[in-house]
Image (tube, rainbow, N blue to C red; front, top):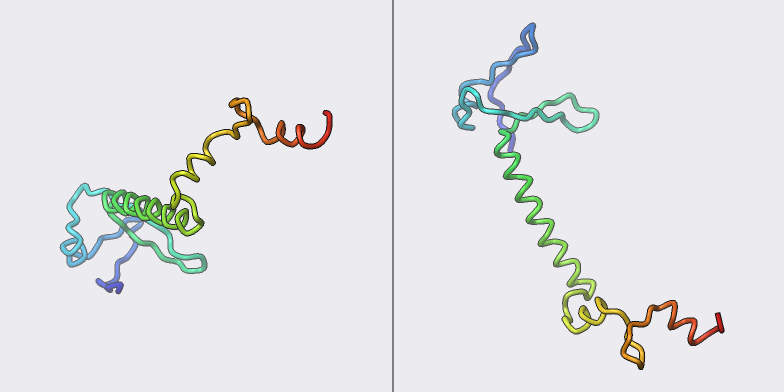
Length: 113
């Protein structure tokens, strides 16, 4: 849940002072790099996040996305059968043992072209 630390004024040069309680709780030190993110559309808001925390967040999101992709592939039937995956990855093989492309297989069945 968001916490209100107080109010701040924007100075003439656009600077704000982060309240001491917030700096202490967040472990902010002089020289720390913060990213300033805008709020949702239609809301005038700015959120600050430590750059190193944001990098860790992106890495965690990437990891979760990879896990989700694996789950979705398994739900679609991919990855559940290694033999089927191997067959899907290799070209079709004709009686001669040479690879046959789908177009060539259609031409053999159908027209003379």
